Length: 373
RNA sequence: GCUAUCUGACCUUCCAUAG
Image (cartoon, rainbow, N blue to C red; front, side, top):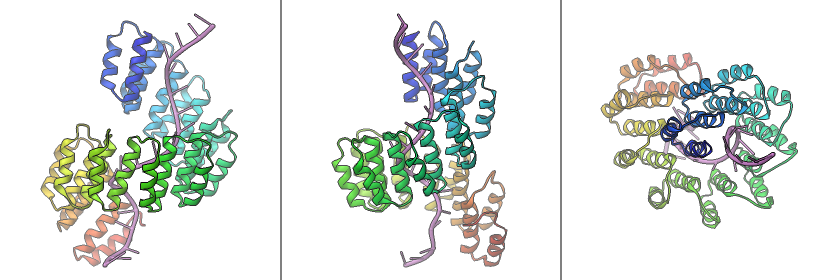
């Protein structure tokens, strides 16, 4: 059972869920730990239904089982479910509290995060890091720094969280000081530092740092790839893309959207077709590539027939496709069908009115917009 | 008695005033 379980955990970490399920189904005996492994595999994938099914089959689920399934909901930012599951747990440890805290932190519920943080019986560096990230996410730099300074212990993760916070709020010098003050660093610190420099648009310095780092991983490459693309240097981006030893779905998505941004439909489709695993970002970027080049029919087909799921970004891209082709009536009808909208939705629709010469209607629409920026 | 499992940090689509 031990060996089987270890294999399943390995699969869970690598995201090979089908193989994990195969191992799980063929192994002779099931104890709590191997069920936990299977729950973890499903939870990481976001398949909470299957995770729950396994959970229900366990005789005496332990705290690991509860925490794993709880983290599955937290990962998907289903805050309400996390709350009710947390309530129904027979016991808690610091990890259960941290999961609840991270659910609030990652979804921007800063007030609730503060409540939990003060209410939890014990805190560790994970708890502090969650609070740090929560404040940084909602743009409260003062509080972010205060959490960092009040930490009883610090480690590489707290340091990189603070480094990222400095970068997000434009404090490049402070980021440099922190970086230089660390007695030892890891690859994530390097990657974060490079991203911080890129945030300040210092591509040349970032290139130097990238060259100097002791070793690179996929994230390092992805970061530089995106930086080249942002800078309009598609040649360098493609060169890096072709030469990097490993790709993740993010690498492909970054390259795809780089082509889409310069309206290179062929380049974008080339990447798209070569991809074996696609996620929503992949589909949305491809949709944007069609929309941006005025290929309405292809965009429609992609949206209606090929895409299994849509989010607001997909809907906005499709709306933009109608608007760009000057089909104001179609755009207006489509706007009414949106399951949910965000700021971008309104802006796209507004632009559709204004750029098609309907100034008066556009003005009316502007006045009735629920969110503006 | 011992060995496996749960939580926190870096990269992609979406907001960018025009030029």
